Image (cartoon, rainbow, N blue to C red; front, side, top):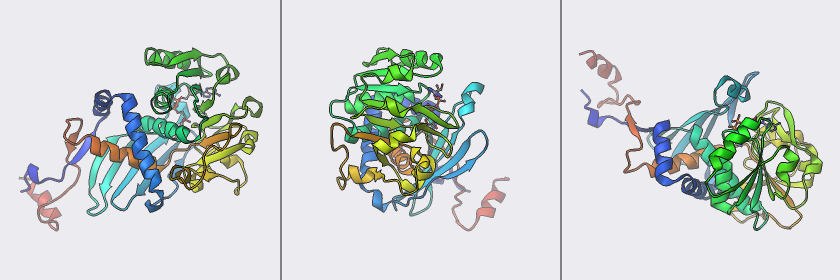
Length: 348
Ligand code: NAD
C-alpha cells in the first residue's frame, strides 16, 4: 500500500496562512515583491500561452477561469465578480488558484486568491503607474473604497512613493472604513464628499467601484491634462466607469487587447480604437508617458499572467516555511496503472 511519504502532496495556502505570510513579509514589501514578479513576467510576455479569460455570466455576476503557461509552469485562477454580494454580507470578488508543473502535469500549489488578487491587482496598478504616472506624483484620488481600496493605496505608497490619498465612495461607511484602516500607515488621508472633491490636486485618479452597468464615475470635464487614470472597476461586458470622451483624450494602455476590448473601458469604443500593450512599454519597446500634458489611462481588467506571477511568488516564498499544509489531492498509486487496485486496498 502507498505510504503517506510516497504520496504526491500539494502545498495548500489557506486564507489564514496567507494572512500569516502577509504579516511575516509585511504588506508593502509583499506588494513590492509581487510587482517585481509581475514586471519580470511582462518582460517575457511573448513566451506565454495567452487567451482571454473564460467567463460565465449570469444576471447578477460572472464566474471566470484565467489560465496561462510559460512552458514550464501552468497556472489558473477561479474568480467571481458579484457586485450585489456586499449587500448580502458576501465579497464582490473571491478567488483561488493553482500552479502546475508542465512536465508532469502535477499541481505544485493550491492557494486562496481573494486576498492575493487584491495584492496583485494593487501591485500591477502601482507597477504600471511607475511607468505612466507623472514624475513626482504623490496624491491619488481613490474613488470606490471597497475591498481593493487600501491595497491600491498602499501599493502606490510602497512602489511610487504616494504620500496622500483622497477618498470618495457613494457609501460613506465604505470611506470611513478605508480611512480607519489606513490611519497610522504613513499616508495622509482626506475624506471627500464628492468625486469632484476627491480629484482636486490628485495626479493619479483611481476608479475602483463595483456596479454592473455602464457607470460614469469620471465625466469628461473632470479629467484635466497631465493626470494618470488607474481604471480598475470596469472589468466585465456592460460594466464600465469612464465617460467615452475621456478615452478619446487619453493614451490608453492595456494588458491583453483581445480580453480588454470585451471587458475594459474600451468596450465602449470602436474595435480598432488605438491602444498600447503594457508589456511593450515595460520591455522598453514603446514609450509610456511622453509629455506633461498627456493623459495616460491604464484600462485594467486583470490578466492571467498577473495571477501566474502571484502564484509563482507564493510557490517560491512558502518554501522552508510553515505557511502551508500538504493536501492529499492527487491519486498517485505506486504502480501508475493500478488505480483500481489502490482503491480496493483502501477497503482493508
Ligand atoms: P467592493 O464591492 O468591495 O467595493 C466597491 C465599492 O464601490 C463599494 O464600496 C461601493 O459603494 C462603491 N461604489 C459603487 N458605485 C459607486 C459610485 N457610482 N461612486 C462611488 N462609489 C461607488 O469591490 P472591490 O472588491 O473593491 O472591487 C472593486 C471593483 O474592482 C469591482 O468592480 C471588481 O470587479 C474590480 N476588480 C478589478 C480587478 C482588476 O484586475 N482590474 C481586480 C479586482 C477587482
